[in-house]
Length: 364
Ligand SMILES: *[C@@H]1O[C@H](CO)[C@@H](O)[C@H](O)[C@H]1NC(C)=O
Ligand SMILES: *[C@@H]1O[C@H](CO)[C@@H](O)[C@H](O)[C@H]1NC(C)=O
Ligand SMILES: *[C@@H]1O[C@H](CO)[C@@H](O)[C@H](O)[C@H]1NC(C)=O
Image (cartoon, rainbow, N blue to C red; front, side, top):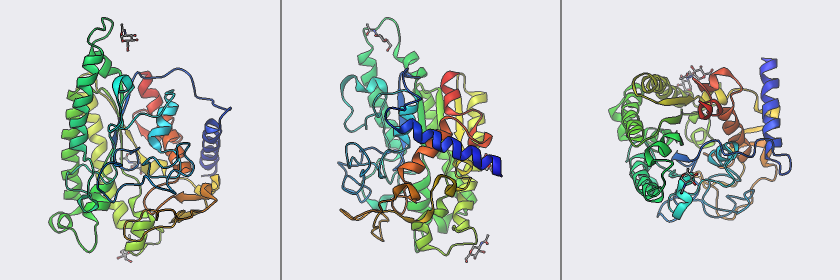
């Protein structure tokens, strides 16, 4: 294990250096013309701000380490989408769909929405949110705008432009946390075994990825589910196992992941031009967090409101934020987002991404 952990420390430290202004290692040429994000609160950068919903965090202390303060990002600083855009050479974050205007959309759009799921009904108790189906409809609006913007362009057609973009999809956590595993018991859990539920989700997600492919996406990175049973919120609701996590929740998420990987193979084999990859968050979560100074893995950094699991407004968060894995009861700190983004971009362990990582995907 030792070499692995050493390597992990190395990349984490390297990645941190990359972030420090002045020591920017990965910068310069934008590696894809455009970047689109589909997802939930892990990617959301403001789409929920105008909605009537509990899943909205445009208030302090969210964004305490972000240059613009609270923006609707569900963390203290940058989220995974911010880091990926940075690694891909974009000068600015990809704008949220709700505020993206004019020629901005040529560089891409972030459609992600806190509380949203693969299933339209997931997260319904939170209030407003933009499920993946609606995110795909919003993408059609963007494509219409891109067509207009490129109408006089003789060097590139909208179709070939859209083929060159990178599409990142991160969905499913809310189908478990805000649907299947809701307490005391959810209708989904009465109706379906974990395996059946995972099969249903993957069937829907496959259709949604097909829609994305049909609208011109070729380079697509799909994130699997992480260790949902290790979030402080689930640990406050269910007894922990010897692993320190709620094993049956992690096992249910693994059933989803196991069924997702063959879908990636299927696209690559049977859909002309498709270059899909699977990002294995389970693998990325392996390693000793203490090696990069994270010492608290089972509690939130901010003062949390018990029911929502989000930070209370204006609460004073911990000052040693780089020692915490979790910012609130669901969402990682900026430091952990950096690790996830950097390992999906450039794998540390071979299992982190399949068949290639994001860096290699965009070069193909
Ligand atoms: C056409 O699109 C390409 C690619 O985005 C761009 O570099 C070029 O400036 C555009 N040309 C015109 C005339 O808009
Ligand atoms: C985890 O803990 C629960 C409740 O304490 C127990 O029922 C279950 O068998 C444990 N699972 C494993 C894999 O140990
Ligand atoms: C993800 O990585 C873990 C740890 O290496 C591995 O056990 C699991 O099989 C991988 N999942 C998939 C779907 O490849």
